[in-house]
Image 1 (cartoon, rainbow, N blue to C red):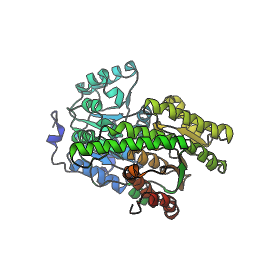
Image 2 (image 1 turned 135 degrees about the horizontal axis):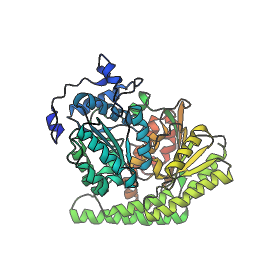
Image 3 (image 1 turned 90 degrees about the vertical axis):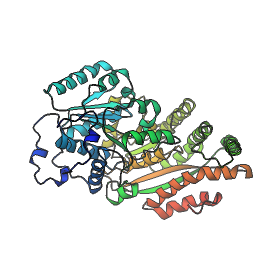
Image 4 (image 1 turned 180 degrees about the horizontal axis):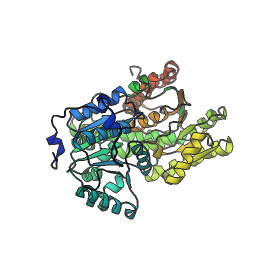
Length: 492
């Protein structure tokens, strides 16, 4: 039976015969049609992946998979597409990614599933006619399946939006790193006529954006059980064990003065809001605080003494290979200048002063250059990559053995993404090592210490949780103890 414009409403009682439960693999694994979804014969889904697939079907073809970075969200999603092809003759798969390099990464995975994806990004002329032709062929019956992988920025463009109205009802949309799609312009561009929806993210909740988070879940569906945490991923072998070394860094005198001023302004903003509302304010629902918190995060991210700590650390590790150096996030104009300064300074310390073979990896690095760097890094020709934000989400370089994190924002998503990125399994990697530079707040007066305590509580909780999961948990926790004592946060 051909589905109408809302396939979800017509599929309330899926009687699932999931791929891994089929008695005969013949028709499922030997699909003769090119470009149609087919499970790779050698693929064995993990138990949690099978559970995730079952949950999505049970929820009538909608939902968000909250799975730890590196735990196989892409494979799980493509397995869902394969099952839909068997169950309802799915016709179109649309994958939306935040970055161009993730489009090419998805393409590599899609090809393992017998798919022939159209890569829809950048110049319209390179993909629009190809997409329109294939959709026409699909409607005329001369083609069975269309796969298109696009970027968030292409999704909102007129060229892609004009094509969406021709997509058939049997279309599945997958939002990769879906937290990004909660931004207003992106969320408004998601096709309402597509009923089968799947969101993927280790961290679907948007930082300081409850409305965007709610909009995301309203479109894709709620977080499905079971969630798959970092602890789960390590326990089941989806991610490797690790050693965790917090590196505590002091602010300079000038940085301490600037830090104190910002913290006082944050405190006054909270106090004013409390008086206006007659209740205690929170950081999450206070729009006025965002610029101040971002300023403070940039100050911490670019702290000068991190460079000295890096020099001391790496001077004794000259033979280290497969190392990733995370620099400050340059998402804001002022922050971009400071982060690029840090990036260049780190590259100079490593490459010139200490003689490491390293290269930078930024948003300006072309796709072709990124592929070259990835191969050089994996082969050991390059000892390290010095990166900013573009290596946070979705990039698959499992050869990474060591990470030196010079900068993390207060955003829990960045914290989770960066650490998970290092823990992907690789044949040559038994265990990963993470050096995490944590800035010690300066001594504060009575007016600001309670504000600082509240600001620090959530961030310190993440550090402590990560330390507890490490193979050297005792050593890592002892390193954080001074920070906990200073602010009376021993209960964390």
